[in-house]
Length: 211
Ligand SMILES: [Zn+2]
Image (cartoon, rainbow, N blue to C red; front, side, top):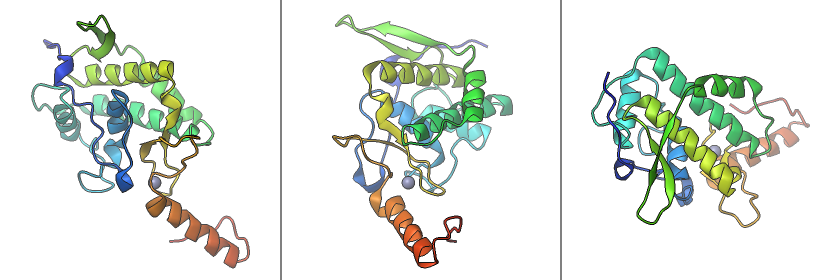
């Protein structure tokens, strides 16, 4: 299969609409945010997993400018994309105080094995990562290169996964003291408050969950 190079200008780095109008991650990190949030996309059916099928993965790649044509991916390749995504979500949850999920990290490491990114040098002499090929593997290699770039610049730790029940949305913590916990105080924060209140009024049954 011939793999065509994808130009940096074709890539859609934007992370799309954010809960409560929260600004998205800055610069190219927004593409990593968009990838992690392909499970909780507010632009589409809320809570839908855009990578649930091979054709869904193909559509996501096309929409982000990471493919030149709509082409469904096979199941093992789709599973690799989900392993990368959920491994990244595990790391983002750790930025919000959770323990690193070692099984998610293991599957991320396996899924990342052999992925490659390309490099372009701009007219200003700056080099930045691009997709090495216009397909899923090129996209995953780019996403991980962008993670590496964010880790080098210090923006990585500010990308966090919301701990809200059934949430996991990746949001960028723009607050000065990096203390944001929830994707949206109005959505997950207030739900958690209600849960805590209910627990207390039920006599401290910490294990009880509201329906
Ligand atoms: Zn949330």
